[in-house]
Image (cartoon, rainbow over all chains, first blue to last red; front, side):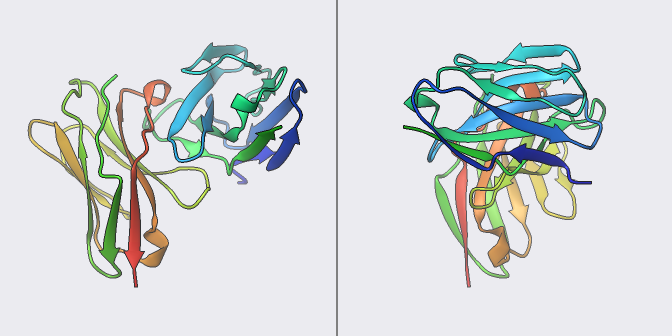
Length: 114
Length: 109
């Protein structure tokens, strides 16, 4: 299993541009999450999904959108990028059963907005 | 949501036990204690979790005080590859896990 795969690993955007961070998992996990991590800080939850077709806001959803059309994929859309969105973005997943707080993380996508 | 307090940094000699403390004095009765670590800039890695009892797995041991207001993660024989930021988190599930700034553990040769 590849686990949780994120693309791209690095991206530079200009202010006002839009882009989509891709996340896919091959573990048939129901739950998926997007976090952001600013330099020297902990992770903050942006959006999460408990299954295909269901998404909900986390702590810092403004400026982002998500969709969950399949179990495997959970893309994160940035509209009108701003310098405040410069961060490392992590996607995570977990199965519907088992330990509720045991998340499997991807390797991250490092985004810079100039 | 209950929050945690961890020392910002710790050192540990290679081969010795690393004991990482965490205070969570406002933890609720149904909230678990989770530990994760983040090596360099990689994605966080789940280590262990517990509710009331002490727990052990192949990576670490978790000691939770009887009043549940604090806990200690123990890495029994620290190696250089254990150098990482360790997060102590309390919550009922993944939707309310609060990752603070953690403890930066440096294992010294």
